[in-house]
Length: 274
Image (cartoon, rainbow, N blue to C red; front, side):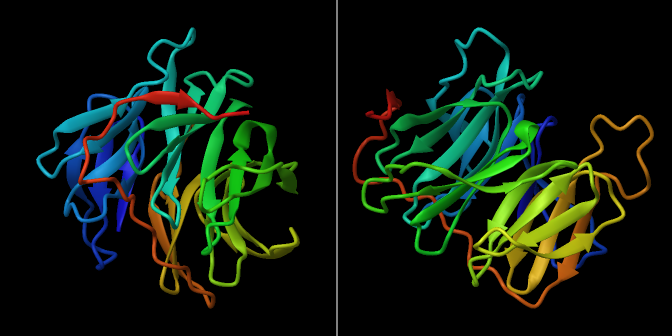
């Protein structure tokens, strides 16, 4: 299992032994929001990093597909990201100051083209996909809302969204969908991870001794939760720790990003057709 230390630009590996230290796999000179493995390229990751999206090689070198936020009027960085079941990579961007509505969601297609899919997001987190790839969940953390989008698995076109969950306390952060279609959501600021059923009802709450749960991963029947210390005036002993919690509903294997290795990757940014 891997995780990122976003603002430090570090990619870390977590050993199976919970008492063993994390191992640094790579460090970038800019923020590293999230990664996904690249299929058929052992040790290579696709990364939402800095102002764009790159391939991170086993030796730590980078090949940039695009830096779509490099020319934005405000200082921007990439945030959370994931690969969908078909192997496309989806990544959100935000401003460093979380300015209202300036973030976006990007998609990397199989040929390496980076497509700007959604605008008007403040702090995007997720996305998370159902196992069939037909539904995407996306949080706008600053607004306390998680939306659900239908997805055409052939074209990756998003349909009209609907509100899935809204929260009054804390902010929805990282998410993952389990084998029953329920969504586990890290609730920043509350010390909780919550499981919501497909109809949006709260099913259960996992309490943690850390105030800022940030990311979640379901590996078999263990829920792994990352937490953050950033912004805390007086961090506690467990703030910023990685937690492992046994659960009774497993997750599905995390998909890899699938790129067209037969052709040349095109460092292109496109806009989603209306």
